[in-house]
Image (cartoon, rainbow, N blue to C red):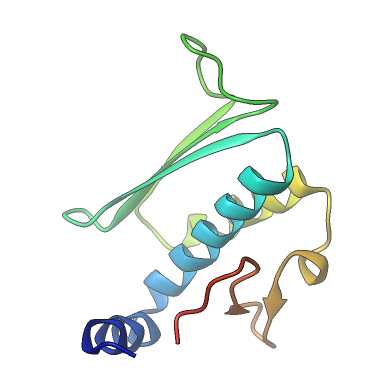
Length: 114
């Protein structure tokens, strides 16, 4: 494991806000790869925010997103996560490996942070 990877993993573990963002990123990837919906998710480090655009049934040039939100507060994380789970038409247990506090414990896609 590289030093950069070790530092990044430690920082992610220390930051509860980042953990919510990681779950959102994981769900974005899952929705994009397993449904017809397209999700654009952009992280802005200078404001510690996420901008999310969802195009139900796929992106079309010139069309506005079906859903758009910029998240600055962790209270919105759960709302976004639930919306993505609805798009997947799956229960949380089917979508993610969750711990007792409903935090993602392992990415549902083929890469690991270790």
